[in-house]
View (spheres, rainbow, N blue to C red):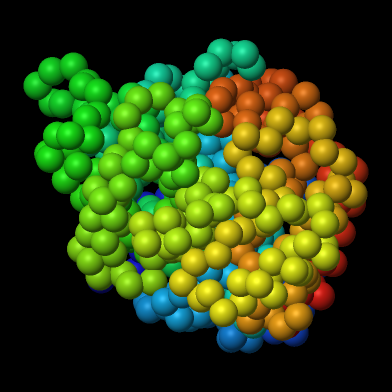
Length: 436
């Protein structure tokens, strides 16, 4: 297998010889041997080159060894096959941080690589896992940004069409799979697990055809089911180990009175088969399947094959989180998670409230081995500008550039001095947690 990171550097016109990164050393947070960049604005990282990001990650890796050339073999952090049961899932909207120049949106995977050094690595006892919001093309307007109120939803995807023009760098001679592999190798070097979001509502999925118009996905069509499985297996084989499943609570027609997706969902036994086949065909026994709101009836979701689900444990009450940690500490296959925020978050929560929730997710247990999983959004680490929010950026794709450049978008997507101070406080919480 080729060295995907070196191939990416060469495709970008860079040489593969690496130097220690002084900027990273000057912005370092440490917790034992674990290191990351903190007290920063995201634009400071996003404005760097991919090579600088690689040098940053090599400089701060916890092995204490500097690699003058990126190593050929990088293993995923080893927390066993059940790692997802206690992980922190941090969703990064890779479309929102993509390069927006004029009306074009592109290279979100390169931006995701650049921001990796600022994601705290995994702890001694549990993993941190980055979830990418977009992988597949979105149905309308893929590759372009639109007005701040024009719909351009990430929740509508196209299969059999490769990967999103918002995300993959199609101007270089390197396949989408190899670009994902480079991202995953760099994340693994940094001590992170990785995954991606997917959707299962049939009318939110189109299938591209070379000989005609796109058609709507149909769960009753065996060929469509097979395509869904194979598209996800292909991604797992690039190094991803987690899949966040939108609308998972309602699989099999469960609690449809609260269903807000569009279109039919897979049957319960069908989804059991699909998750089993993704694990089996990928050869990855450690995949974590996280389901949106798949909590309450724990046995239903455990037997489905899920690892965790969102929105059950009250995040604002430290004692209640700790209580649920105690109740569920012997359940190592499945546990509900604690939400700092989710993809439907419409903002308005104070910094103190967010910090309190992060504190609960990181410390509300008796022993680290009892920790419940948790779910965070990019905004919980890097606060967004005040007139937008996580859900708005999932539903729309505006550029906040004031001069048409990517740098201006990155500078104006997030808050400024108060966001830097907040990021520093998040870093302090993680610094206490990572050696537990």
